[in-house]
Amino acid sequence: MKDSSVAALLQSEKNPALRRIGEKVLAGERILPEEGIILFENGSLPFLGALANFVREKLHGDKTYFNRNFHIEPTNICVFSCKFCSYSRLYAHREEGWELTTEQMLDIVRKYDGKPVTEVHIVGGVHPKLTLEFFAELLRKIKAHRPDLHIKGFTPVELDYMFRKAKVSVEEGMKYLHEAGLDSLPGGGAEIFAPEIREQICADKVDAAGWLKIHQTAHELGMHSNATMLYGHIEQYSHRIDHMERLRSLQDKTGGFNTFIPLKFRNKDNEMSHIPESSIVEDMKMYAVARLYMDNFPHLKAYWPMLGRNNAQLTLSFGVNDIDGTIDDSTKIYSMAGSEEQTPAMSTAQLVSLIKQVKRKPVERDTLYKEIRDYSTIDLKEIEVNPLLN
Image (tube, rainbow, N blue to C red; front, side, top):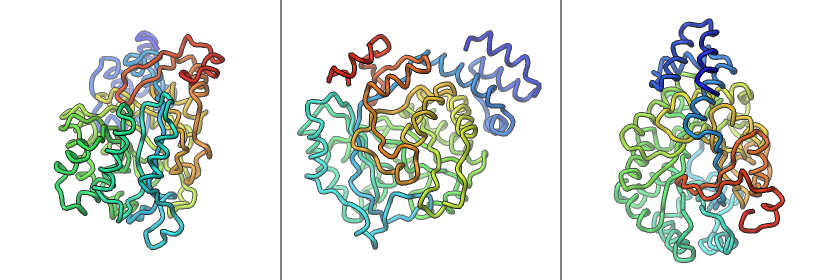
């Protein structure tokens, strides 16, 4: 959306507070926490979408990024009992879950030999017997087999437990894993930082300060990371803004975050199943406000297996410029929680088609957003038959 179109929109806005916030966005000025709450409470979807799309296009034009990646989920056995989780099984009931050996995980990596994937994403439950040394050795073996593969792995929930069990500091533990082959961190485990909400939904795992410290340490080692927020459960708008403000403040210090990823709460088969899920209107509002508030985060991602393909496509008009990747080796976390996508894997051709359908430019990236290939001028039939493209 052009500056003139946004300016006209602001002229017609009857709410003076919203008009002032919109003028700040247009001028590239930072939104304050209280203004973020006003956007959530009073901003109409067309108003928020137009502003968020303005920021998105100012940063990235029509480019929409994706990558070719696959997931390894070492285990869903976990010592923690988060109430929103449909994925994990407590250690006492470990016969109901799974636990992969190092060799089984390496077999997953080998399955992609000769295929142009650029990233492996490793994240799972917190198993008491899968130690820091166990994972360091896994990283070394993956790097020995395929040195070019970027390893993005482990949430602060997993890392905090590993480090405490190994009796090492965060700094020592992060340096050890980085030297073993860990390239970057995903954004999971953040949930909602506000202690009064965290106490109710995930009381026994690493708190906000611990989560932020691990990411700050990674950034200080030269690593990049992502950040998430679980929304649409018992939190209020003020909790969402508080969460984003803490992330924005750390980004001011380190500049190490690549992407912010709002994650929709899904209510199937967990202890919060009585809480209704957020509407699609609320989902789009969340993405739009995130794009406006997270002014120092270069990218905003919609994780399509969680939202569903059609809804993820819709987010591209509400500030989102990344829809993750092909996600081969189907990730179970969201399918077990009731996501629309029970088999979350897409071919490159399907991803490209999804992006092109809404007049955006599909661009393959690596984990750190180096552009690999512009697919906007490549015919879909060529992508489908060319193994290097698909």
